Structure formats: structure tokens, C-alpha cells
Amino acid sequence: MSEFVNAALFGWYPYLCLTVFLLGSLVRFDREQYTWKTGSSQLLRKRQLRWGSNLFHVGILVIFVGHFVGLLTPIWVFDALGISHGFKQGLAIVVGGIAGIACFIGITLLAHRRLFDTRIRATSSFGDIAVLLLLWLQLTLGLSTIFVSLQHMDGHEMVKFMNWAQGILTLQPSAADYVASVHPLFKAHLVLGMTIFLLFPFTRLVHVWSAPIWYLGRPGYQVVRTRFAERRAHEAVAALQRSTPLRAGARPEHQLAE
Ligand code: HEM
Image (cartoon, rainbow, N blue to C red; front, side, top):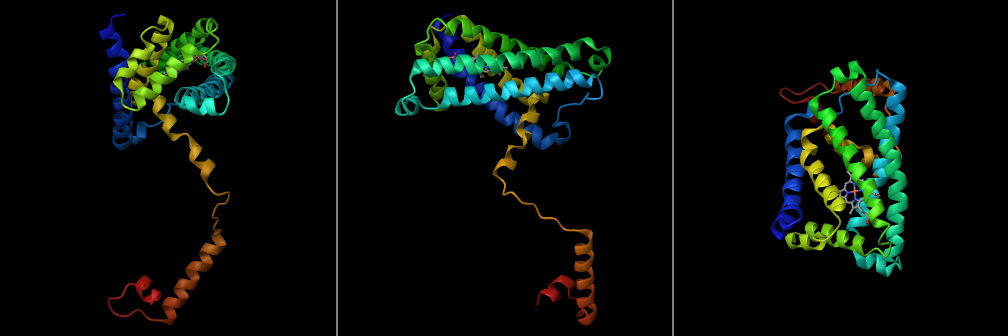
């Protein structure tokens, strides 16, 4: 791969993808909220959907957290904690590998269900099918990289990916140089990964933004008003209004507040 193509793919393409990902999601949320969902086909082939969906989602969530922490934690933090690069590489292979296999089984069940059941196929859009196949391919590439990683268990290749990802996110396109010499399987995995970000706003993947993680930070109570309490409140307001006749031109809530 020439230096120019490497710089374009790993130095500039990431910014195109991230910009479309963020702006596209925002515009879609603003203009097309009623399409902000995954079109459901859950009445059909329920069992296969349940197994496929659960395995896929558990797997991809573990992979997401693993990629996020693994690629974006500054290297000095691992060094300060005494976590060697070799140990981290082993962890990525074992945890990412197990989650990757679960996710792979799940997405294969989902793809089989969507492609080979004529009724589900008929209600699927081009985007529904394309996104499944892209994720399937990305997983296959990710899992194949494990065989390359096994050949450098000291973790030096992994450090290149960390430097690349952290360089790109701190606005340094020259970070492309870090991945110039990595195995083509890794390059394909990175390019397809970025392309998934690029296509994200145009697919059902936007539902990821609605994951109910906000609930985790909420206090553990909720306000409950029974119908009885509501009726009592209405009665109290009506009684107050009766006892204090409304002045001409005044609004009840203003007069009550006095
Ligand atoms: C821009 C997005 C992505 C980037 C930059 C990325 C990057 C990487 C890198 C650098 C590795 C090798 C880790 C190592 O062994 O040192 C890897 C492995 C892997 N990736 Fe991705 N990836 C992306 C998206 C995805 C997605 C969307 C999936 C799942 C559909 C995925 C699934 C995997 C799997 C299963 C592995 C092997 C296990 C592991 O090492 O964690 N990746 N990825």
C-alpha cells in the first residue's frame, strides 16, 4: 500500500466517518424521529430471534467496551497499573475471542432468519440486510486477526493500534504512520470498522444511541401519584378557588400563589 493511500485511509478517512456519524445522527434525530428504531419482526420465528439477538447483543457489548477501553486508554495508565503489553494482548484475545464467537453465532442466527424466512425477508429493507452482512463480515475479519495477534504475543502490534486510535482522536492525521506496516487483515478490519461508523446514521443502528444506560446514573426512586392523591389535589384547588373568588382579570394560579 502506497504512503498516500495509507495516509488517506488511516489519516483522513477516519475524520470523514466520524463527522458523518455525529452530524448524520444529529440530523436524523432532529428530522426523522419516527424512523429512530429497529423495525420489528418479532412476531416471526421468535425463538431464533431471542437466541440470535441475545448472543449478538451480549457479544457486541463486550467487544465495544473492550475496543473502547483497549484502544483509548492512554498507554501510561496501563504502565502505571503494572499491566504489561503482553498481558493486555492476551486479555484482548481471550475476552475478545469469546465475545466475538458468541456475537458471531448470534449474528449468523439473525442473518439466517432474515435472509431465509420469506415473510421476514419481504419486510426487510435493503439497509436491514446490508447492516447485518457488514457486521457479519467485520466480525469474521476481527476473529481472523486473532491468528495474526497470536504471532506477536508481546503486544507490540497492539500498541501501534492504540497510538493510531489515540492520535486520530487528538486530531493528528499523521497517526496513520503507526499502522502503515500492520497485517492487511488488520487494515481491512479498521477500514470496514470506520465504514460502519460512516453508514451508521442511515441504518437501524441509530437505535444504539437510545440504549437506556442513563438509568444507571439515576437515583433509585420514582415519583408515584395515585389517582386518589390527584383527585384530592384537584378538590383542594377547587375549594380554595371557591373560598377566594377570582378577581377580575386574574389567573387562578397567580391569585392562589399570592
Ligand atoms: C472503527 C471500528 C473498529 C476498530 C478501530 C477496531 C479495531 C480492532 C483492533 C485493533 C483489533 C485487534 C486487537 C488486538 O488483538 O490487538 C480488533 C479485534 C477485533 N475486533 Fe475490532 N475494531 C472495530 C470494530 C469492530 C466491530 C464493529 C466488531 C464487531 C462486529 C469488531 C470485532 C472484533 C473482534 C471479534 C476482534 C478480535 C478479538 C479482540 O482482539 O478483541 N471490531 N479490532
